[in-house]
Length: 268
Image (cartoon, rainbow, N blue to C red; front, side):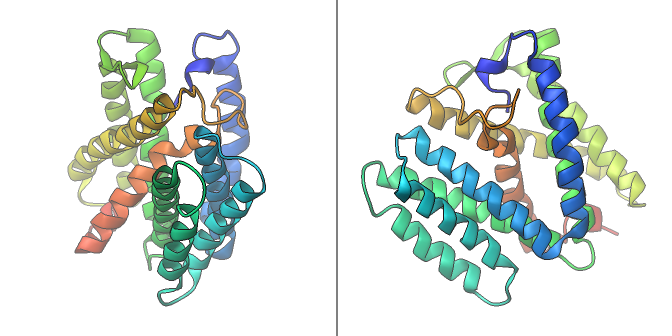
């Protein structure tokens, strides 16, 4: 997602590029490594996103840090066999929603972030196609975000959801879909998939899913009168601003795999 406060600033694009140059190699290395390395990175991201989610409703302090640590633990335990991830996640969701104001909001955010991050870790652990599936997902979401941003700024036009995210346009959505379709097809070619056309179509569909995740977080921020979820990443805002599309797309892809497809790039 593109934080509203970053749009229109002269250095915003430069900041986005510099941040991407720093983040992409780290992300690529951990995706390649998989296992505990990847799970640890995702657990840290989960904790940071949940801290930002709590901050949306004014919840800060030691309790917030403690709950964020549980968010990380619930994600990290997903690399263990058996039902431990579900148990830890369920107990943590109950605790997260059990104190202070905005309980339902905090519990819903905790559940959403943890389940999405567990889905991503689980997808990477798929055998034998986990690496390819996560690379495909990353390429699709990154291209959705990048192409939507630049197309929207260049073309403009009618607003996509002005009451939720005033800067988003239909042209940006179409640009994101086009970029995701190309990325999906390119990964298919690289992995020698015989279903390139299907991958192009599903890439465009997942661009819409990623944008819906973006709008969901934007709606939450608007409800609490917050522009950005944080300012940790220059040019992007917070971690939640950067990864909101990954959350919805990871959940959707996990469901697709669970339904028996094995994931788009696993089709043979």
